[in-house]
Image 1 (cartoon, rainbow, N blue to C red):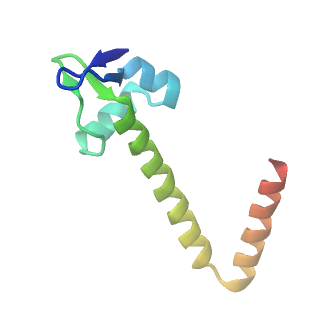
Image 2: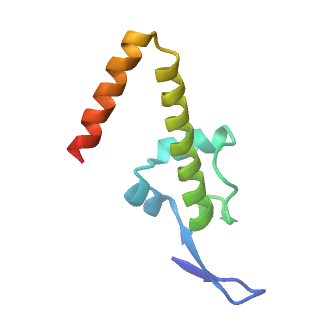
Length: 99
């Protein structure tokens, strides 16, 4: 869905719960969990029974989440003893070759 900014007349692409589930696999339960913990960006519009989010804000949110997961994984690999770290790196290279 789209909205138009009243100040600059720019189209703003919006996402509701249905789009978030279809496009990002974020269920209503997960949305509620993240919202209750203050992890989601603030809704662009908030109604009594639903929230609507700006697509750019949600894309930034998902990008940040992915980057944090990767950083955490890299740190865990770095913290492994040398032999286990070498094995983990070998497995990661094999994954890369599958693509």
